[in-house]
Length: 157
Image 1: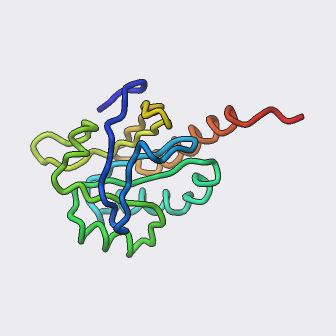
Image 2: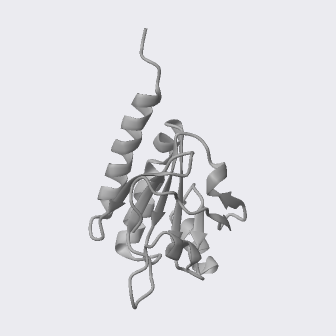
Image 3: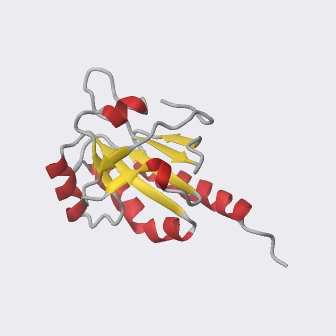
């Protein structure tokens, strides 16, 4: 797992919506990159739905979000469609992104449930890791983004 302050590896892949997702081009307040093990499993479904349900709030704060798993493109597309996911999702079948972010479980080769918050300068600003508490990722991300958004706002006159 990468640490806060480290440089985030670039992500330049076609997301399931057919659009190219380039991490360094996201800008804004920050980008939330969450990794999950397998589509259609209970924890992953909950996590995707929670980020879906808070997508507008995250976007209004100026942040973007992307989900990444080692599923194939077809499975990832079905998963996003079934849960009406409004943000990009990446099928990392060759595990190149998961390896770069050091999120793979040894032996089984699927992603651990790790969420990174990446600054516009490609620095890892926060790392959240809760394998069994998928809801904590959303809660931690919202708290972090809220604090960052408040810090970035000019003081009220």
